[in-house]
Amino acid sequence: MERRLLGDSDIAVSRLCLGTMTFGEQNSESEAHAQLDRALEADINFIDTAEMYPVPPKAETQGLTESYIGSWLKKRGKRDDLVIASKVAGPGRNMDYLRGGPRLDRDNIHQALDASLKRLNTDYLDLYQLHWPDRQANFFGKLGYTPADDENATPLEETLSALKELVDAGKVRTIGLSNETPWGVMTCLRLAETLGLPKVVSIQNPYNLLNRSYEIGLAEVSHRENVGLLAYSPLAFGVLSGKYLGGLQPKGARLTLFERFQRYTSTLAEEATWAYVDIARRFELDPAQMALAYVNSRPFLTSNIIGATTLEQLDSNIASDALVLSEEILEAIESVHQRLPNPSP
Image 1 (tube, helix red, strand yellow):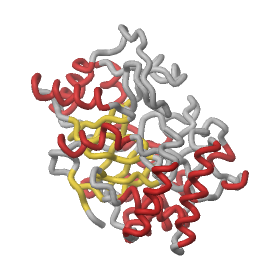
Image 2 (tube, rainbow, N blue to C red):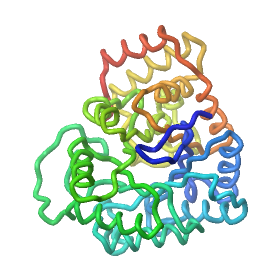
Image 3 (cartoon, one colour):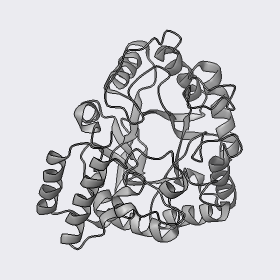
């Protein structure tokens, strides 16, 4: 599988990354281990997780995802053959059970990283990411920005200085952002250059056929500053597979189990999904594989974070790496996008 460098670092990651947020909720420990084994067999070397996983986040399951990866690492070894990424949670999101309410200040970051390393059975992370900003910003399904009083937000200088301490200590190799805006990325880059702080190497944001908002401002940042996209939700919570169309609610599927995941279920999103599924069927493609192949083809992408609850789904997602979309298919996709742009931010 093709490898791409994380920003300016020498860390090469597979074009597909295994997302793990179902481990501990929809997937048992043995199922998680089977997925990790299958990913390794497919030449995927990149694993992404977070301290708050699994989702939906709750106190009784928090940390299980990292623990399952850690127990797999303890059994399998091969730590140095893998690129492991995790994330520190920002404020809000009803997670007072996590350090009394997580923030991106020095103490929280140090505590979070040490706890993640313990659960993961490793003494370092290849990539440590800020899961979302400490300040008020338009992320998690918001396109418009509304100014808000965020005088209590942790300054980015403090956050990046804390991350530098972790890098200097050898606990973290590189740092990245997630659910971030162009302003946030460029501010982090400016602080890194002027204050000698670590430069971010990646941006983990949503990107899929129903939400291409990354292209509006961040794609140029990725290109000109060499800070590539780690695309999450490339199947829009599974919606782009077409399995929910017509009001279907497959047993055990995420949107069937959890009402909170409604970002990609608007009337416009369903109309766009029908159109994309029709393109796939017209060209005799699996809709999910077509959607993933589109993300794989983007020039600003570093890695596409795929996730699954069954090995069959995982195998199908992995197969997208070999799919090359023709110009005719890409033009058909673009035609739908022009008619129904970003129906689900």
